[in-house]
Image (cartoon, rainbow, N blue to C red; front, side, top):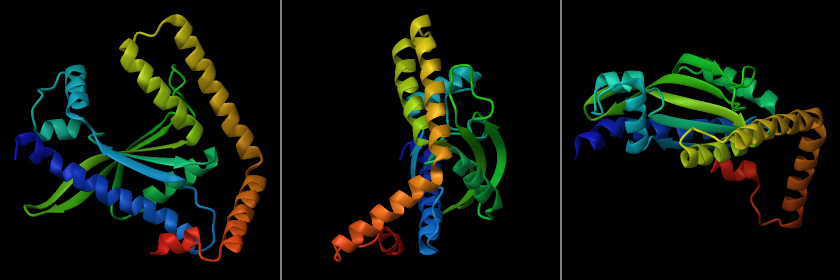
Length: 223
């Protein structure tokens, strides 16, 4: 096993465990027949190429070390998607209250979006993993955003690789306009939140009634 594989192993374990726990939060809302603020959860360990880029940016040695783990808080990354902007505050508070991780940093790019138009809420947490060598505490970044914010961020990320961060002015302006349009969409959806959730509940009940053999979402999550 190479040095990098050994170094990244606790981060992979953290991502796997945190995905289960964060998805478990979603399931618990279904059990009590409440609307979940969490739509879905994804996670990944930062690829070595991205770690290398970050070491160049921060002036760090590209080698496994405690300093690298302390300086890069997003080697382990989780992303929580929400339907509505208001859900983001609910999710952040749930994470703050947890006893199995400790929030060490928060960055609000929703109230204070980046000049590019990027919006998301970032939390860095300390999370302990149990390994055969004992407990190891690693940093993990949890990004919380709406589906519209995530769509915009995915497009911006792809374009950033193409232009290496040096966007043509026209593309830059269009991205900013698209970010504002996406946020307006989020605000409009929030304004009719109750109607949307009633329609979703009705549709879910209709599907189950029309197909008795189909497990409800609550039952699937409980298994």
